[in-house]
Amino acid sequence: MAISRAQLLKELLPGLNALFGMEYARYGEEHKEIYEQESSERSFEEETKLAGFSAAPVKNEGSAIAYDNAQEAWTARYTHETIAMGFSITEEAMEDNLYDSLSGRYTKSLARGMAYTKQIKAAAILNTGFTGSGNPTYGDGQVLFSTAHPLVNGGTNSNRPTTGADLNETSLEAAVIQIAAWTDEKGLLIAAKPKKLIVPPQLQFVATRLLETSLRVGTADNDINALKNNGSIPGGYCINHYLTDTNAWFLTTDVPNGLKHFVRMPLATSMDGDFDTGNQRYKARERYSFGVSDPLGIFGSPGST
Image 1 (spheres, rainbow, N blue to C red):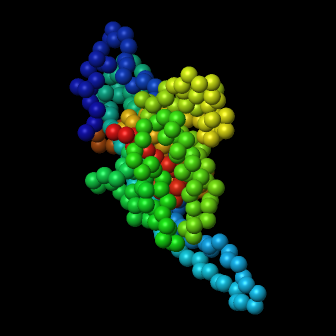
Image 2: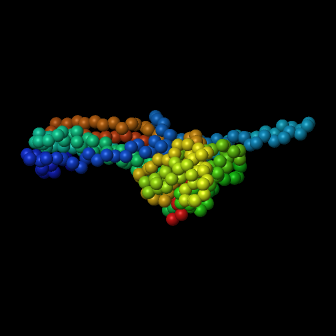
Image 3: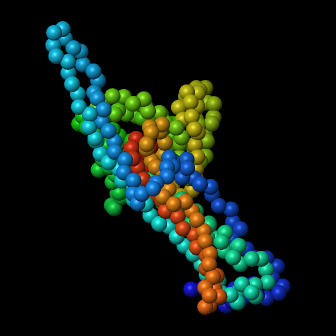
């Protein structure tokens, strides 16, 4: 349905001092702090995790050399979605508007709506990453944050605390230690390290105290802040305003091919006029997907409640 003069009554009358409601600031592309971005030329993308070799054994004198097998562990799949929205304005509304360009104003609002959807979809991977009804599983058959990501050698990796923990010095140090103990599919240490802390707005002040003060928080002892002194989280922290759990917190890691954002078609806008009605139509469209290849690309805790 086209936007008509009846919906823009005040904009057709003289004496209006200001138009407002579309000039609000918006948060930036916060998904870029979490996801690696790649382009795609297909309707979907698949990425397969490989299992290499185990630790080399001792070869006794005169005995035969031992041979190991490499194999595929599992495959992650990304299916792109088409995100699109548009609006239409009648010819009369365009002619009779007394103030700034209708098309320019509503095109900005269209871009805002497209950007908002992208951030919601990006954050949804984290928001639904813990065990819960209907929450998605990924290539290894587990939810994103699990204590039992299976390995080819029969072991497991865990990218969350066994019991959910609130963000504090103890839980953050425990996460750094836990990440350092991750192994590959054959049980070899992978030297994983945290990169950046991701928090909702409600935890920003806790994050500042934990990562940016020189001395330990909440103690009268004159101890150094080991997290800061050791550079345990070199990227500091960032706020994601689209996280829905006010107690959950996350650590991105340096493990490659973790969480990915595939762009099939970048955002494009277009317009055309309808000859019969004279209406002007505007639309925006893009295709992309968010997903997980290697869950070790991130560590998460749902908090204690």
